[in-house]
Image (cartoon, rainbow, N blue to C red; front, side):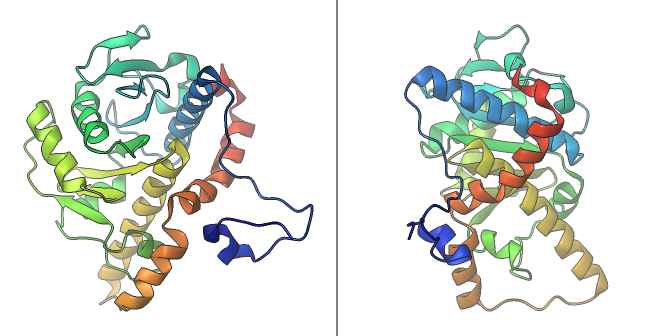
Length: 268
């Protein structure tokens, strides 16, 4: 019988010999890992574009460079999520200097993500956009409730940043966002939107997708009546089943398969 990590074993049980599931890849060189991360990042933007998470020039996803982890790859300022290729990505340091690439970086992306990455060495990737339901829910200034199985992934695992001061341009505000995120997988930026992090681009993107949908579900439930909460013990149990880094990475696989099949030019 094949042995699976606990996060997947609970979902599928023991596998017969010869039956496998995809797992996060390992790399023989830093160059190979860098290219993989860039391709994952480009795919992440295409997924955001497909879900309609773009709003003008707002929104950004970042991933650390595997060789120089104090720098990160990010989308060029003002480029459509739906058109971003791996070769379009730019690399910046924590001072905002463009090290690779031909276009400028969104200052808000640098201010927020540089401080998040600096505060969270475990956060390989971070994702933020002005998605419709995320920004609507953020205006309430309340956390997500455990009213659905999917929302339990964020139970007692997301913060709230409640000090909106306009477009994020100052490093001090980036530090406050990072403080509100803390050790969590996500933070709700009041009157602004959502931000998620992960140990891979796939994980960060999946948390954003499912958090956006959980915000939508709670808004719908609140409009219809008084949602009934899942009890704390069950919510924590469920978070342990579906809220781990590996579970996040694996849940993103169908999205990656779809977007890489439909948009093969993202690898260019």
